[in-house]
Image 1 (cartoon, rainbow, N blue to C red):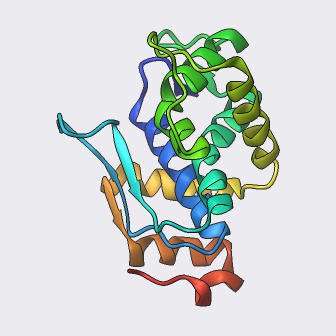
Image 2 (cartoon, rainbow, N blue to C red):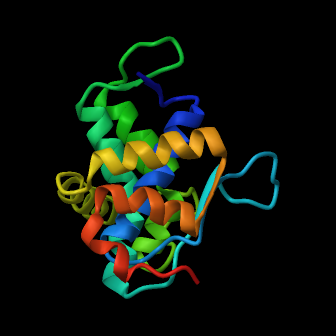
Length: 179
C-alpha cells in the first residue's frame, strides 16, 4: 500500500518513474531523475531531466505519471495516511488537481488554469483520457524497478537509468543516448 495523500516518498518515486519509463519507451534517455529535498527553488518534490523530444513524445511523457497513478489506484494500492483506500473523487482531486499541475502544462504547452488554479474541465478530461489509455501499455515492472531504485539511491543518472531500462526494454538500448 502506498500513502498517496501525504504523499509518501514511494508515491513520489513512482510518479517520476512513470515519466522516465515513458521517455525510455519513446526512445529518449532521461539525463537525471532525483528526489528534491529541501529545495525551495524546485516546483516539486522530485524531478526528471528528459530531452525535449517531439510534441507527441512530450505529451506521452507528461501524462505518464498519471497513467502510473491510475494503475495503482485501480489495483487498490493507494491509501490515505491512516491506511484506508482512497475513493475516486479523492484520487482525481490529488492526481489531476495537485500532482499533475506541472505535467498538464507540459502536456498542453501552456497553463490554462484560471485565477483560482482550476483548469477547464475539458482539458482535465482530455488529460485523464490520455493517461488512462497510456496506463495499459506502460511496463509496470520497469516503473517499479526505477521507483524502488530512486527511493534507495535518491538520484539516478543517465547510465543508471539506461542500465535499468535495458533489463525491461532490451531492444531499445541501442537507441538511448546520454546527453
